[in-house]
Image 1: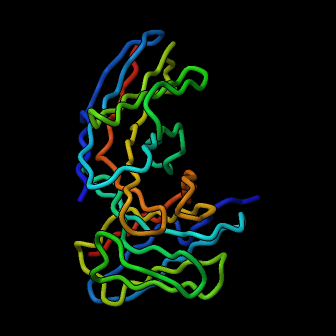
Image 2 (image 1 turned 135 degrees about the vertical axis):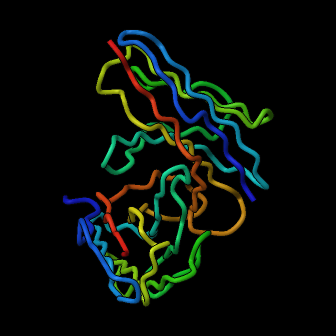
Length: 115
Length: 112
């Protein structure tokens, strides 16, 4: 199993450009998440999904949209990139079911710079 | 809401024992996770506590006191490869999706 994979690994955007970060998992997990990690801020949840077609906002959703058409894929979109969105983005997944706590499995991250 | 506090940095000697503390204030509690993150890499799961007490897993142990809102991660027989950031994360009771709130992490440096 590849686990959680993310593309691209690195990206540089100009202010105002748009792009989509891709995440895929091959563990048949129900729940998927997008985080951003900034120095001194820790991991902050952007959006999450509890199943195909079901998404919800996390702690810092502004400026981002998500799509989960298939169970194994979770896409994060930046409609109009801003320098404040320069960060490392991690995708994660977990088997699901809120009554049981499973650890989250993380992808390798996408390092995004907005100039 | 949830608030999680960890020390920013710690330094320890190879072969020694180090304890990394985490305190939390939450509107509801449903488990605490510890993750390890090496520079430039993804976080990886270390331990999970939902009941009070100590969970031991090889050189790593994690303790939880729910009444005190306190946990610690204990690393024994430190090795150079243990130099990393250690993240404390709490799962709350409100909302679905098994969401976690992460602390800012403790950067551990292991020296010779």
